[in-house]
Length: 394
Image 1: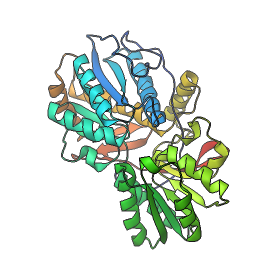
Image 2: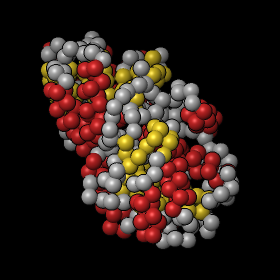
Image 3: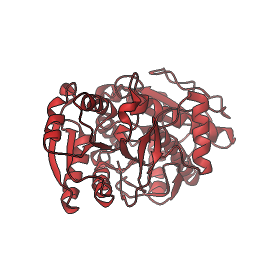
């Protein structure tokens, strides 16, 4: 997930927000149904496809990204200029289903893809969008492999390597630990990518990593071995470059074995507070890096958070903010490039590549964002800590 990570501050969140009334009949003011059929098309609207998990174990990410994107669509359409239409498809965090969703969006006439949300499906889908010349901006698929060798695939999230480096820098610079244990998923590109860079940067920063233990999706049901090794090694901080679902289980099992180190994660942990039946007290004082803070007081963030809460009854997380920024970045580039609703996807693709590599974008996940020709974004990360069940800036 990221590019040049320099400073860290604080941030927070979880999913969805609300739909404002849109200026176009093709843009709904309520969230799309999960796995719904394509919405009614508009001849005046630029068609943006969206793909992410809105069901299954990673649904927190996809629902948030979808809801954030829909809010942006509604806001832009309400201004009365160029209209946009969002058709969001559920991939259940499954690569094959994600490709199926992509093909459905192609049949619908998609001109730009906002997706996918998670990395493994993105690896499969971006191979298709590269071959088909469909411009792609992912809100949160952070592996460098997602953009590698694909001139039309861009990220608005930080890359995995930069998350790993930034995490090691933050722990060392702020003296948050004397001995660090790492638990990561060695079968997941996101988790593996962050860990590798973290381990390398930890050496540079003289950060002592006393153990690094692994798991896979198939073994993510019992972390007693990993936690026991960390505890016996004297780790006073456990780094978790993993998704929120296994992280929730780790926090629970750590408590049951009376092990209470500090826990520090990356954007994959964002979403843990809205996990169904999760005891939020387990996450007290958990820290994580993220590009968005729902408690920021700038007008853009306050507007977004208020609308999201009004529509979805929750505080938006980073993925919602990423989805929101994706739509605004696409719209900015379309406007500058003169993209219209009747252009074929390949022509739109060429125009947006030129704009994204030249423009600067201010969003709620970062100001002064720029993109390299590789598709990697440059922006600063933030850090947050969970206090009383709420993300708080550090």
